[in-house]
Length: 585
Image (cartoon, rainbow, N blue to C red; front, side, top):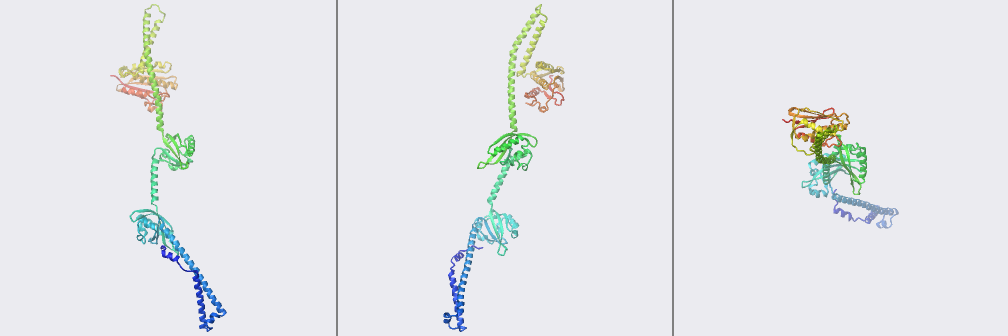
């Protein structure tokens, strides 16, 4: 289909044919036919002269000659009409071809016309300007010569069936003159001729380099988003404004042991993250409604993982708004704050315990001050009792029992002084000086010291000495603190359990390797299994008002004396604690 030339266009527009010229030609042909008829009649049939035939024809002759003239003029008119129609049709064809040629060369795609063997018959201007090839290097060559090897294979797979199956589409790489390639989408269709045979094929190549570049960038962006989305330690997802799950990151899915297909498409509150608590489900429904109206929602929730672990989640619902301010997405986000909550609780508990320790320290200082203040009046009382006793013994007549009363009063005053002295040593910092002491005597002194604390109790404290007066080299005040703590723990456990016949048995014995052991056993409720494994760790206690420091400090004191302190956790009834110290040789 060659383009229309200027000569064709001028020939079409400057054609001189006129309707009246054709009519005159027809009239002249009719008149000429009449003269011929006159000559034939005169020369062949001797029917008068030419003048007679012109001026005095017979009626039939006249009618016939006029009919010839009219017919010739009508034929001229008909010929003119047919010629005009042909010229108009040709003009339309040329105009359509011109418009097609303009469209063909102004198209932004590569357009080729090829024969069944793939030879290029025609190419549009875009091919030449984009690839750098001149026309003579394109026309007449096989179109596959401009494809990369992989694209040639694609062409071989698709082109042979074009006649049978018609339109084909494939992605190919077109090679420019400078060797670079263009990613193009190729569409091919067979063009039938007038007989219906496919002798020409229309090939259109559309540059998709930018589209592929954008697709690769989107794919890379999606990959990076997925990497961040799934690797973050926080729980993140996407919801529509109605609360339906669109996406959930891997961290959130791993927590409940599910996959995206298990939760996507479901209402968020019906997923396993929330079904353990109807209260939380209702709270979440309200939160989704608020977020759908553009509000930021935040609250704390307890969640159970796939392994049964319970965690505290700082949960939020953040709306994503479009340009009109409408919520198009909701981002649910959860952060595991379990450790933070535990740390806050631990800090609060330690703060309370520190305040308790400070109060105890203050009480100790007050007790020490009181002991110091009472020590002098008691010393005076002992002195007065001693003087009164001496005077009474020298008097001849006294009421019966008077001397005995003075002796008892003096003894109790001395005992009160010993208690106050011991109290001062107990609440004081201690001298940290180790001395040789008989262990049985030290234990007996402790029992005597705490007897005032159980004076109103029916708990029976029994001491079974068995160390054969073996000495130990210890800071007696510190070891006394340990024994007092163990004995008081037993008494409190019996009292709290409501046992009426409570018994605490303290015994000593000689052990192997030169050690001396002290055991404190009771018939109380025994050791709480909840704290059995961490009994000597700081802040471990089964008491509601306990600090959990007594046994930890006691073990530290004993170990500082190269000894050991342990509990018999296998004891079926009551509790038993053992303390061992090196004997002094």
